[in-house]
Length: 255
Ligand SMILES: Nc1ncnc2c1ncn2[C@@H]1O[C@H](COP(=O)(O)OP(=O)(O)OP(=O)(O)O)[C@@H](O)[C@H]1O
Image (tube, rainbow, N blue to C red):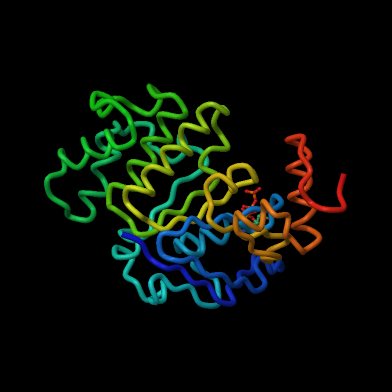
């Protein structure tokens, strides 16, 4: 199941600061769309607006053509799920993994819970006996797998990923990215991923928006990235800095 996401003139103000002055973008059903940019540029805020964790924005956000504000919270939660950077913080320390996975099923009144829970844990590559463990008995990568299982157990049409691998070791990062790629291929959900890492964006995302100070300055696809077609000065600087860090230069006129 997948869904289109459209944001038009999205704007949010924190105190005296207009954090997102006027953001617009469109994500196709089934697409993986990236948000990349400097720290504090508003990437996570965009995800929080879409999921209504921040509800005091103005503008228009539509999921499959329906304004997100018009959706009942239960309907919205069924459709949109989020995975956070810190899996330890997003799992209740006193809840077993079985309880963490059964909560959404209970809230949404779904039956055959034990079967769904077992399938969900197996789908993220963890043994079924992990259901009786608590978050502190898991590694960081295993906890993130549980967070992904919990997000996907309701079969959402949109998965919001807020730096899902940045708190993990490099080797574990690759495992989680591969897991997300496989699950997306199998289930076809739309995803929007926030990251600092251009390598992650180019591996995972069909297209990505580069953000600076609350604005989207450029949207690129993978081919445009490989062909060094970025035009905006900040986009070029971000790409060149990332490539230089990896020991490569792609953009003409840079060294
Ligand atoms: N609820 C809030 N109240 C006040 N300020 C906020 C709130 N949420 C975010 N901000 C501010 O808005 C700005 C953008 O935050 P946001 O988390 O969206 O940035 P980001 O691009 O995701 O950054 P990072 O990559 O460091 O996570 C920051 O300056 C942050 O302090």
